[in-house]
Image 1 (cartoon, one colour):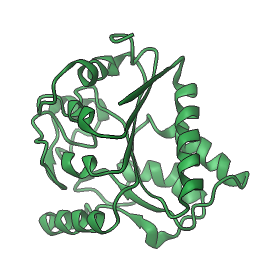
Image 2 (cartoon, rainbow, N blue to C red):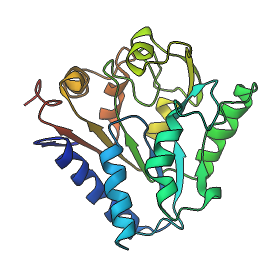
Image 3 (spheres, rainbow, N blue to C red):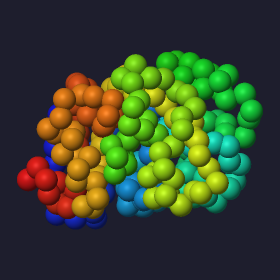
Image 4 (tube, rainbow, N blue to C red):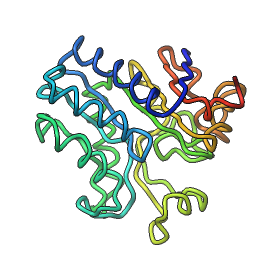
Length: 235
């Protein structure tokens, strides 16, 4: 594990973007998993800027989404996918058939999860970019998630529902911990003092289902990029 503590969110995003750009240049047909939420927005902005400045090309890149609320329509502005689509994918030259998402409108979520897991096996993820929840969840692997878990339907914790302001949505589809761990390289991003306890758990705790982020320390190629506030309990 390599940990880098930056002075603020902007520097965290800049460093992350430099790594992602380097990976894309090294492998133009990179398979990358992008996170949702607020944390990656700075990264998305910098990647779009790099594309517009002709520093990177997304035409051969494949992407996978980590998670999505269930059930929710794909074009719902409250969906997790809406943000990454609006702030990154719609602004670069990625082919639509290279964008892989979880269908959260289908009633057959079991089949959808199995198919998504199989698709990831066929297109091994080169670069997994993760954020982390205040309770230590990665993707939507909430506390209690097992190390061997795969893509599945999960019940969101009351804490996650409250923080994400989604009172009517209680579930989500998410890739599993084992799905994450099979990635070639992982970049974990965290910003703000409310993420400090989760980062402390990653650094200090033994891998355990009570704090899923702790499983990441077993990965062979993990880069943790955080700002000072997120690292305040370890620095």
